[in-house]
Length: 380
Ligand code: NAD
Image 1 (cartoon, rainbow, N blue to C red):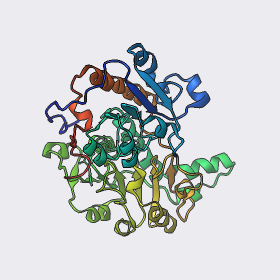
Image 2: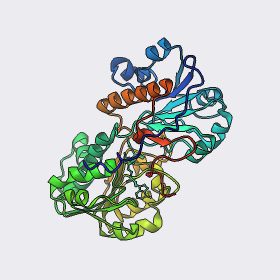
Image 3: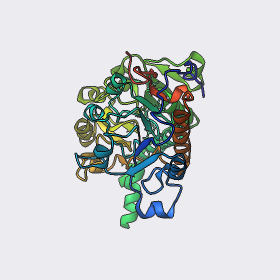
Image 4: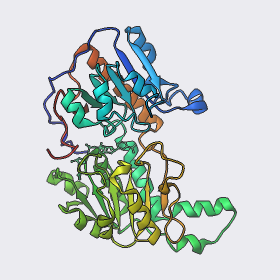
């Protein structure tokens, strides 16, 4: 893997704890239920608390953990008023809005146990000098594998074929009429950072025809060559050349609704689209309509514009005209048990650095004190 991200200087603008003991830490995590009681490696759950409780309490800190995050009576709204650190995961994000930040008088750091900090109003965090930290890289392999799997299940029309078997039917032609090979296809990634690049690396052995990428940060020439990638500077031009498009950029002002009805018109008829980045990068209704008409042959991913997704969210049930093309799952590609071990460990390291006043790893700092430290959340 080519490392074009590791060159930033160590950040010295550290947030420092109000006290060495007695810091209030609030974590908003997903409820794991029976599964979390049976499987202690489900660390990202309310039940298993990222493995942090005994350590935090032994240091004299207060640790509040909840999944309650919506509305004025939620634990998020109640406790953010005096918490110094808020930890949340992208899988069950506590949305730290500008309004909440204005009420969070003691807040000094928002920590993402995982990758992707768009659930925090980053501009408001910059203004209030609240650090936003994440465990960069912790689940990028997990997501890249999921992207490759999603591409394959769409291209090979896997889901309807499996559903047919479960129903007790056996009509090969009904599924084979919309099944293809990945070999020889043109694949484009929107965002060629840690995940996008890993996706291209993993696709090479399939004998894909060409890899394209759209990213304002060009890859070094040798990195491009290593994954057979060519940069395309115009998004519509990129999508018009691809059989498969995969979205791997962060959600920010420049990417919200990036894949909308107008851009979808420029996709090849019958293209497949995979989005494991963030739901709001794609226009919900425009995608559903493109799939319904067959302009898109398939859409897959694990991210939704609101999480948890409402029961009637159109992406749960949308289909192409041949009754397939839907590879949607709940947000879990980056929360495999392997990934949870990594992001729980990384969260603890971030907290240790915070409490001891040591600098954070530069790549983990999204917002430092009063400024963006990453170039991945838009050109500014
Ligand atoms: P990264 O910072 O390594 O790479 C992001 C790339 O996107 C950068 O190269 C950046 O220049 C590029 N980019 C930013 N804005 C762009 C734009 N407008 N157009 C094109 N490219 C743009 O991040 P990463 O580790 O690869 O993660 C990418 C995103 O994937 C995260 O921000 C997160 O939203 C998502 N993610 C999802 C899961 C999951 O479980 N589904 C897990 C991890 C990350």
